[in-house]
Length: 408
Image (cartoon, rainbow, N blue to C red; front, side):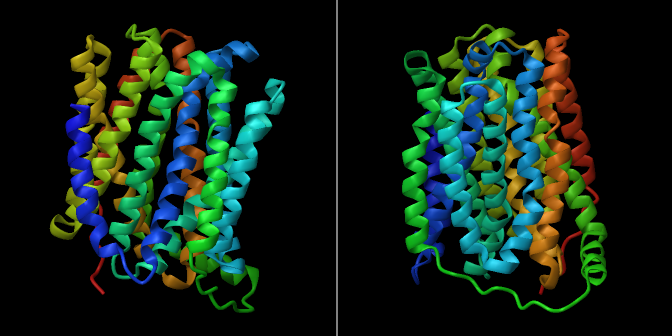
């Protein structure tokens, strides 16, 4: 099944990427997509390494979940400054800074001698992630003004492939090399991608600044984010990311401790979630043109509800694989909501407002891992999964009220 999905995904990628080539933009897209592959893939790999990390520092599930929350919380806190920084120095420079911070922080994470140091370096990983997030979207929108949904969908899909491949490689390597050497393997790849991005990503125009007062700029931001379509889009996205955070932080641990799989099998199943998600991200971006945002988002959320509700009651490799494949479809929501919200914001406030919104919803959603970790420590791992499924149903309901954007 995994091979079939991968083949179909390859065909869809080739179909989507064809119109994104030319004028030197193809290499820029590759650099941005590979950067996201490594950044997301490295972040998602950390949950696979949690058993070893817990043993090294003698911490419990709740503390391990808090570590993941720190990464995501700092990731969220960095979004708004990243948007403002892009307005000052340009998207390209912020993107390069993000890759440099990630390279250094992953190297420091691998060498952390104490848990306190590990926690600080984990926060730096969050900074590197946070600088990349909003900049990636606005940079692609400027490079591909007429095809931004496809470019963003492709980039997120490539990131999902990284989130699929790197945990498998990490799961296979960690038993022989240990978690420190395994995570350090990302450092030379991040360094090479930083150099590639520096060479091929074009500079973008820095928005003209005005001497508006702080109060006036704040009113402009608040006006931009208080639109009904923005509130609904961000509300649904916040809950969906909370579900994603809670699920991905502990899915490998859940599969090992509750379902009885070994580490390698759990890593492969974990990767399947992202392979399925990558296919949904590419398909979702294309489907919006034909069916509209509302219908596509409701479908993507609804498809993953029953699998999560069924997971606690299933056993065996095949049934659980099917459930995880279907649960991964929810990842297709990301490019659709990203493009929808960005286009719903007024151009003059877009970078700052998008960064502010991302800070808000990632801060809230980052608590998903602590939520699941606390329930797991109390013996309610299955209940946590059921709650995540119920929350995803709420997401589908919210998206059912989402208005379509006016065509320009």
